[in-house]
Length: 374
Image 1 (cartoon, helix red, strand yellow):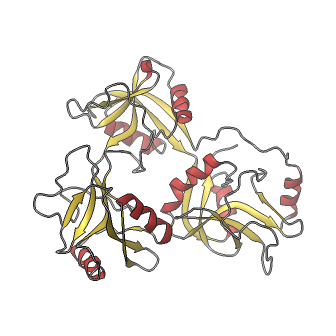
Image 2 (cartoon, rainbow, N blue to C red; image 1 turned 30 degrees about the vertical axis):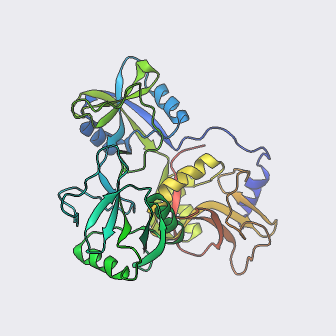
Image 3 (cartoon, rainbow, N blue to C red; image 1 turned 180 degrees about the vertical axis):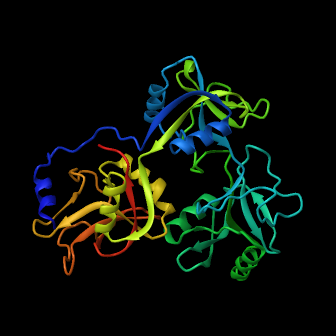
Protein backbone atom coordinates (compact mmCIF):
# COMPACT_ATOMS: atom_id res chain seq x y z
CA UNK A 1 0.00 0.00 0.00
CA UNK A 2 1.30 3.47 -0.92
CA UNK A 3 2.28 5.60 2.06
CA UNK A 4 0.30 8.56 0.70
CA UNK A 5 -2.93 6.52 0.85
CA UNK A 6 -2.27 5.53 4.47
CA UNK A 7 -1.66 9.21 5.28
CA UNK A 8 -4.87 10.26 3.55
CA UNK A 9 -6.86 7.67 5.46
CA UNK A 10 -5.73 8.84 8.86
CA UNK A 11 -6.73 12.39 8.00
CA UNK A 12 -10.30 11.26 7.39
CA UNK A 13 -13.13 12.17 9.66
CA UNK A 14 -14.85 9.20 11.27
CA UNK A 15 -18.20 10.80 10.47
CA UNK A 16 -19.93 9.34 7.45
CA UNK A 17 -21.04 11.57 4.61
CA UNK A 18 -24.83 11.42 4.38
CA UNK A 19 -25.29 14.34 1.98
CA UNK A 20 -27.51 13.95 -1.05
CA UNK A 21 -25.67 12.64 -4.09
CA UNK A 22 -26.64 13.42 -7.67
CA UNK A 23 -25.21 11.23 -10.44
CA UNK A 24 -25.63 13.99 -13.00
CA UNK A 25 -25.94 17.74 -13.32
CA UNK A 26 -28.84 19.46 -15.08
CA UNK A 27 -28.34 22.21 -17.63
CA UNK A 28 -31.25 24.40 -18.74
CA UNK A 29 -30.99 25.42 -22.42
CA UNK A 30 -33.14 28.45 -23.19
CA UNK A 31 -33.51 27.69 -26.90
CA UNK A 32 -36.70 26.43 -28.49
CA UNK A 33 -36.26 23.13 -30.29
CA UNK A 34 -38.25 20.01 -31.13
CA UNK A 35 -37.69 16.99 -28.88
CA UNK A 36 -35.39 15.36 -31.45
CA UNK A 37 -33.41 18.57 -31.96
CA UNK A 38 -33.11 19.00 -28.19
CA UNK A 39 -31.86 15.42 -27.82
CA UNK A 40 -29.21 15.98 -30.51
CA UNK A 41 -28.07 19.20 -28.81
CA UNK A 42 -27.75 17.50 -25.42
CA UNK A 43 -25.85 14.55 -26.84
CA UNK A 44 -23.41 16.86 -28.64
CA UNK A 45 -22.82 19.18 -25.69
CA UNK A 46 -23.54 17.11 -22.56
CA UNK A 47 -24.73 13.51 -22.11
CA UNK A 48 -28.42 13.37 -23.08
CA UNK A 49 -31.82 14.91 -22.42
CA UNK A 50 -32.60 14.89 -18.70
CA UNK A 51 -33.64 11.73 -16.90
CA UNK A 52 -35.50 11.91 -13.58
CA UNK A 53 -35.65 8.90 -11.28
CA UNK A 54 -36.88 10.31 -7.97
CA UNK A 55 -38.24 13.44 -6.29
CA UNK A 56 -34.78 14.69 -5.29
CA UNK A 57 -33.73 14.73 -8.94
CA UNK A 58 -36.96 16.43 -9.92
CA UNK A 59 -36.25 19.17 -7.37
CA UNK A 60 -32.74 19.62 -8.78
CA UNK A 61 -34.14 19.92 -12.28
CA UNK A 62 -36.69 22.49 -11.10
CA UNK A 63 -33.87 24.49 -9.52
CA UNK A 64 -31.99 24.48 -12.84
CA UNK A 65 -34.94 26.07 -14.65
CA UNK A 66 -35.17 29.67 -13.47
CA UNK A 67 -38.22 30.63 -15.55
CA UNK A 68 -41.13 28.96 -13.75
CA UNK A 69 -43.62 29.84 -16.50
CA UNK A 70 -42.14 27.57 -19.21
CA UNK A 71 -42.55 23.96 -20.24
CA UNK A 72 -39.28 22.16 -20.92
CA UNK A 73 -38.43 18.94 -22.72
CA UNK A 74 -37.04 16.00 -20.72
CA UNK A 75 -35.84 12.67 -22.09
CA UNK A 76 -38.96 10.54 -21.56
CA UNK A 77 -40.45 9.22 -24.77
CA UNK A 78 -43.06 6.65 -25.67
CA UNK A 79 -41.33 3.40 -26.58
CA UNK A 80 -42.11 0.29 -28.58
CA UNK A 81 -40.91 -3.28 -28.38
CA UNK A 82 -37.37 -3.68 -27.02
CA UNK A 83 -35.00 -6.40 -25.85
CA UNK A 84 -34.38 -6.99 -22.18
CA UNK A 85 -30.64 -7.37 -22.82
CA UNK A 86 -29.24 -3.83 -23.01
CA UNK A 87 -26.20 -4.66 -25.17
CA UNK A 88 -26.80 -2.02 -27.79
CA UNK A 89 -29.28 -4.20 -29.71
CA UNK A 90 -32.33 -2.08 -30.51
CA UNK A 91 -35.56 -3.64 -31.76
CA UNK A 92 -36.94 -1.49 -34.58
CA UNK A 93 -40.37 -2.44 -35.84
CA UNK A 94 -40.29 -3.05 -39.57
CA UNK A 95 -36.48 -3.11 -39.65
CA UNK A 96 -35.17 -5.63 -37.11
CA UNK A 97 -35.51 -9.38 -37.53
CA UNK A 98 -38.78 -10.74 -36.16
CA UNK A 99 -40.78 -13.94 -36.30
CA UNK A 100 -44.23 -12.66 -35.30
CA UNK A 101 -47.09 -15.04 -35.99
CA UNK A 102 -49.83 -13.79 -38.32
CA UNK A 103 -51.80 -11.04 -36.60
CA UNK A 104 -49.21 -10.59 -33.85
CA UNK A 105 -48.46 -8.64 -31.74
CA UNK A 106 -52.14 -8.36 -30.93
CA UNK A 107 -52.31 -6.86 -27.42
CA UNK A 108 -54.05 -3.54 -27.00
CA UNK A 109 -52.15 -0.43 -25.85
CA UNK A 110 -51.91 -0.32 -22.07
CA UNK A 111 -51.95 -4.09 -21.65
CA UNK A 112 -48.85 -5.88 -20.38
CA UNK A 113 -47.06 -7.24 -23.43
CA UNK A 114 -44.17 -9.69 -23.37
CA UNK A 115 -42.85 -11.91 -26.15
CA UNK A 116 -43.01 -15.69 -26.22
CA UNK A 117 -41.59 -18.26 -28.62
CA UNK A 118 -44.00 -20.96 -29.78
CA UNK A 119 -43.14 -24.53 -30.73
CA UNK A 120 -43.27 -23.72 -34.45
CA UNK A 121 -40.71 -20.93 -34.06
CA UNK A 122 -43.20 -18.07 -34.30
CA UNK A 123 -43.56 -15.25 -31.75
CA UNK A 124 -46.69 -14.19 -29.88
CA UNK A 125 -47.34 -11.51 -27.28
CA UNK A 126 -48.94 -12.43 -23.97
CA UNK A 127 -49.74 -11.10 -20.52
CA UNK A 128 -46.39 -10.77 -18.72
CA UNK A 129 -47.90 -12.29 -15.57
CA UNK A 130 -48.71 -15.61 -17.23
CA UNK A 131 -46.38 -18.48 -16.31
CA UNK A 132 -44.15 -20.09 -18.94
CA UNK A 133 -40.73 -21.75 -19.07
CA UNK A 134 -38.04 -19.50 -20.55
CA UNK A 135 -34.61 -19.34 -22.15
CA UNK A 136 -31.66 -17.47 -20.64
CA UNK A 137 -28.59 -16.28 -22.49
CA UNK A 138 -25.08 -16.69 -21.06
CA UNK A 139 -23.02 -13.93 -22.65
CA UNK A 140 -19.61 -15.21 -21.53
CA UNK A 141 -20.09 -18.58 -23.23
CA UNK A 142 -22.65 -17.47 -25.84
CA UNK A 143 -24.99 -20.30 -24.90
CA UNK A 144 -28.74 -20.70 -24.42
CA UNK A 145 -30.07 -22.23 -21.21
CA UNK A 146 -33.60 -23.65 -21.05
CA UNK A 147 -35.29 -23.15 -17.67
CA UNK A 148 -38.24 -25.52 -17.44
CA UNK A 149 -39.67 -23.90 -14.31
CA UNK A 150 -42.65 -21.73 -15.29
CA UNK A 151 -42.39 -18.09 -14.20
CA UNK A 152 -43.86 -14.72 -15.09
CA UNK A 153 -41.83 -12.72 -17.64
CA UNK A 154 -40.49 -10.38 -14.94
CA UNK A 155 -39.51 -13.27 -12.64
CA UNK A 156 -37.88 -15.00 -15.61
CA UNK A 157 -35.91 -11.84 -16.40
CA UNK A 158 -34.71 -11.58 -12.78
CA UNK A 159 -33.76 -15.27 -12.73
CA UNK A 160 -31.66 -14.95 -15.89
CA UNK A 161 -29.96 -11.75 -14.76
CA UNK A 162 -29.05 -13.23 -11.39
CA UNK A 163 -27.61 -16.49 -12.75
CA UNK A 164 -26.61 -15.81 -16.34
CA UNK A 165 -26.70 -12.64 -18.46
CA UNK A 166 -30.34 -11.96 -19.40
CA UNK A 167 -33.42 -13.34 -21.10
CA UNK A 168 -32.53 -14.30 -24.63
CA UNK A 169 -32.55 -11.82 -27.54
CA UNK A 170 -33.32 -13.11 -31.05
CA UNK A 171 -31.64 -11.20 -33.88
CA UNK A 172 -31.74 -13.64 -36.79
CA UNK A 173 -33.49 -16.71 -38.15
CA UNK A 174 -30.43 -18.75 -37.19
CA UNK A 175 -30.64 -17.61 -33.55
CA UNK A 176 -34.38 -18.24 -33.52
CA UNK A 177 -33.79 -21.83 -34.66
CA UNK A 178 -30.93 -22.35 -32.20
CA UNK A 179 -33.14 -21.22 -29.32
CA UNK A 180 -35.94 -23.46 -30.56
CA UNK A 181 -33.54 -26.42 -30.75
CA UNK A 182 -32.37 -25.78 -27.18
CA UNK A 183 -35.96 -26.02 -25.99
CA UNK A 184 -37.03 -29.29 -27.63
CA UNK A 185 -37.37 -30.94 -24.23
CA UNK A 186 -39.71 -28.24 -22.92
CA UNK A 187 -42.96 -29.50 -21.41
CA UNK A 188 -44.75 -26.43 -22.79
CA UNK A 189 -45.20 -25.22 -26.35
CA UNK A 190 -44.43 -21.61 -25.39
CA UNK A 191 -41.34 -19.99 -23.87
CA UNK A 192 -40.59 -16.46 -22.71
CA UNK A 193 -37.94 -14.57 -24.69
CA UNK A 194 -36.48 -11.15 -23.80
CA UNK A 195 -38.82 -9.02 -25.92
CA UNK A 196 -41.20 -6.69 -24.11
CA UNK A 197 -43.21 -3.53 -24.68
CA UNK A 198 -42.22 -0.64 -22.45
CA UNK A 199 -44.77 2.13 -22.83
CA UNK A 200 -42.30 4.88 -21.81
CA UNK A 201 -38.51 4.92 -21.53
CA UNK A 202 -35.70 7.45 -21.30
CA UNK A 203 -33.75 8.72 -24.28
CA UNK A 204 -30.66 6.80 -23.11
CA UNK A 205 -32.73 3.57 -23.26
CA UNK A 206 -32.82 3.17 -19.47
CA UNK A 207 -35.97 1.99 -17.73
CA UNK A 208 -38.52 4.54 -16.58
CA UNK A 209 -39.92 3.67 -13.16
CA UNK A 210 -40.49 7.10 -11.60
CA UNK A 211 -43.34 9.18 -13.12
CA UNK A 212 -44.79 12.56 -12.13
CA UNK A 213 -47.68 13.10 -14.53
CA UNK A 214 -50.09 16.00 -14.15
CA UNK A 215 -53.76 15.21 -13.62
CA UNK A 216 -55.30 13.45 -16.66
CA UNK A 217 -51.84 13.01 -18.21
CA UNK A 218 -50.64 11.40 -20.38
CA UNK A 219 -53.69 11.88 -22.58
CA UNK A 220 -52.11 10.97 -25.95
CA UNK A 221 -53.96 13.74 -27.73
CA UNK A 222 -52.60 14.24 -31.23
CA UNK A 223 -49.64 11.85 -31.34
CA UNK A 224 -48.11 13.04 -28.08
CA UNK A 225 -45.12 10.72 -27.72
CA UNK A 226 -42.68 12.99 -25.82
CA UNK A 227 -42.64 14.51 -22.33
CA UNK A 228 -42.34 18.06 -21.02
CA UNK A 229 -42.16 19.40 -17.47
CA UNK A 230 -44.65 22.19 -16.78
CA UNK A 231 -42.90 24.46 -14.31
CA UNK A 232 -46.09 26.32 -13.33
CA UNK A 233 -47.57 23.02 -12.08
CA UNK A 234 -44.77 22.27 -9.59
CA UNK A 235 -42.87 20.33 -12.22
CA UNK A 236 -45.71 18.01 -13.22
CA UNK A 237 -45.30 16.17 -16.53
CA UNK A 238 -47.34 16.43 -19.74
CA UNK A 239 -47.13 14.30 -22.87
CA UNK A 240 -46.53 16.50 -25.91
CA UNK A 241 -46.15 16.26 -29.66
CA UNK A 242 -42.42 15.98 -30.28
CA UNK A 243 -42.56 18.62 -33.02
CA UNK A 244 -43.53 21.33 -30.53
CA UNK A 245 -40.86 23.99 -29.99
CA UNK A 246 -39.81 24.15 -26.32
CA UNK A 247 -36.69 24.93 -24.27
CA UNK A 248 -35.15 21.86 -22.67
CA UNK A 249 -32.94 20.44 -19.94
CA UNK A 250 -29.83 18.34 -20.58
CA UNK A 251 -28.06 16.17 -18.06
CA UNK A 252 -24.35 15.61 -17.73
CA UNK A 253 -23.49 12.18 -16.36
CA UNK A 254 -21.14 12.06 -13.41
CA UNK A 255 -20.48 8.31 -13.62
CA UNK A 256 -18.78 6.84 -16.66
CA UNK A 257 -18.16 3.16 -17.37
CA UNK A 258 -14.84 2.56 -19.14
CA UNK A 259 -14.95 -0.55 -21.32
CA UNK A 260 -11.22 -1.20 -21.12
CA UNK A 261 -9.60 -4.07 -19.23
CA UNK A 262 -7.02 -2.60 -16.86
CA UNK A 263 -5.49 -3.56 -13.52
CA UNK A 264 -6.81 -1.67 -10.50
CA UNK A 265 -3.78 0.66 -10.42
CA UNK A 266 -4.04 1.29 -14.15
CA UNK A 267 -7.76 2.05 -13.77
CA UNK A 268 -7.04 4.46 -10.92
CA UNK A 269 -4.43 6.25 -13.01
CA UNK A 270 -6.76 6.38 -16.04
CA UNK A 271 -9.62 7.91 -14.04
CA UNK A 272 -7.38 10.51 -12.40
CA UNK A 273 -5.72 11.44 -15.71
CA UNK A 274 -8.92 11.61 -17.78
CA UNK A 275 -11.75 12.29 -15.29
CA UNK A 276 -11.61 12.73 -11.51
CA UNK A 277 -11.24 9.40 -9.70
CA UNK A 278 -12.27 5.78 -9.44
CA UNK A 279 -15.81 5.66 -8.06
CA UNK A 280 -16.45 5.69 -4.32
CA UNK A 281 -19.79 4.11 -3.38
CA UNK A 282 -20.40 5.77 -0.04
CA UNK A 283 -24.22 5.63 -0.04
CA UNK A 284 -27.09 3.44 -1.17
CA UNK A 285 -28.04 6.12 -3.69
CA UNK A 286 -24.68 5.84 -5.45
CA UNK A 287 -25.02 2.05 -5.43
CA UNK A 288 -28.33 2.42 -7.27
CA UNK A 289 -26.55 4.41 -9.95
CA UNK A 290 -23.85 1.77 -10.20
CA UNK A 291 -26.68 -0.63 -11.06
CA UNK A 292 -27.58 1.60 -14.00
CA UNK A 293 -24.12 1.66 -15.60
CA UNK A 294 -22.44 -1.62 -14.60
CA UNK A 295 -24.63 -3.98 -16.72
CA UNK A 296 -23.07 -2.42 -19.83
CA UNK A 297 -19.62 -3.74 -18.83
CA UNK A 298 -17.87 -6.39 -20.92
CA UNK A 299 -16.42 -8.01 -17.77
CA UNK A 300 -18.36 -9.79 -15.03
CA UNK A 301 -16.77 -7.57 -12.37
CA UNK A 302 -16.00 -3.83 -12.47
CA UNK A 303 -13.33 -1.97 -10.48
CA UNK A 304 -14.32 0.55 -7.80
CA UNK A 305 -12.04 2.90 -5.86
CA UNK A 306 -12.02 0.46 -2.95
CA UNK A 307 -8.74 -0.69 -1.45
CA UNK A 308 -7.49 -2.80 1.45
CA UNK A 309 -4.38 -2.31 3.57
CA UNK A 310 -2.95 -5.47 5.07
CA UNK A 311 -0.66 -3.64 7.48
CA UNK A 312 -3.61 -1.97 9.20
CA UNK A 313 -6.29 -4.51 8.09
CA UNK A 314 -9.01 -2.14 6.89
CA UNK A 315 -10.80 -1.17 3.67
CA UNK A 316 -11.06 2.43 2.50
CA UNK A 317 -12.09 4.56 -0.49
CA UNK A 318 -9.17 6.17 -2.31
CA UNK A 319 -11.22 9.37 -2.71
CA UNK A 320 -11.05 9.87 1.07
CA UNK A 321 -14.49 8.67 2.20
CA UNK A 322 -14.93 6.49 5.27
CA UNK A 323 -16.69 3.19 4.62
CA UNK A 324 -20.07 3.54 6.29
CA UNK A 325 -22.40 2.12 3.63
CA UNK A 326 -21.39 -1.45 2.67
CA UNK A 327 -22.66 -3.92 0.08
CA UNK A 328 -20.25 -6.86 0.29
CA UNK A 329 -21.03 -10.21 -1.26
CA UNK A 330 -20.99 -13.06 1.31
CA UNK A 331 -17.44 -13.97 2.35
CA UNK A 332 -15.96 -10.67 1.16
CA UNK A 333 -14.80 -7.61 3.09
CA UNK A 334 -14.72 -9.42 6.42
CA UNK A 335 -11.04 -8.89 7.17
CA UNK A 336 -8.17 -11.34 7.15
CA UNK A 337 -7.56 -10.74 3.45
CA UNK A 338 -4.93 -12.81 1.65
CA UNK A 339 -2.39 -10.18 0.62
CA UNK A 340 0.02 -12.50 -1.16
CA UNK A 341 1.35 -11.77 -3.64
CA UNK A 342 -0.44 -8.41 -4.15
CA UNK A 343 -2.76 -6.05 -2.28
CA UNK A 344 -6.54 -6.61 -2.40
CA UNK A 345 -8.87 -4.17 -4.09
CA UNK A 346 -12.63 -3.93 -4.52
CA UNK A 347 -14.89 -4.54 -7.51
CA UNK A 348 -18.64 -4.68 -8.03
CA UNK A 349 -20.57 -7.43 -9.81
CA UNK A 350 -21.62 -6.05 -13.20
CA UNK A 351 -24.92 -7.91 -13.12
CA UNK A 352 -26.98 -10.05 -10.76
CA UNK A 353 -26.82 -8.90 -7.15
CA UNK A 354 -24.20 -6.23 -7.98
CA UNK A 355 -22.44 -6.70 -4.65
CA UNK A 356 -18.81 -5.91 -3.87
CA UNK A 357 -16.05 -8.49 -4.00
CA UNK A 358 -12.40 -8.56 -2.94
CA UNK A 359 -9.86 -9.22 -5.71
CA UNK A 360 -6.10 -9.09 -6.27
CA UNK A 361 -5.24 -5.71 -7.78
CA UNK A 362 -3.52 -7.22 -10.85
CA UNK A 363 -6.68 -8.63 -12.42
CA UNK A 364 -7.87 -6.73 -15.51
CA UNK A 365 -11.44 -5.41 -15.51
CA UNK A 366 -13.67 -2.62 -16.79
CA UNK A 367 -14.07 0.22 -14.29
CA UNK A 368 -16.22 3.20 -13.30
CA UNK A 369 -14.81 6.73 -13.12
CA UNK A 370 -16.41 9.78 -11.56
CA UNK A 371 -16.49 13.04 -13.49
CA UNK A 372 -17.37 15.26 -10.52
CA UNK A 373 -15.59 16.73 -7.52
CA UNK A 374 -17.19 15.81 -4.15
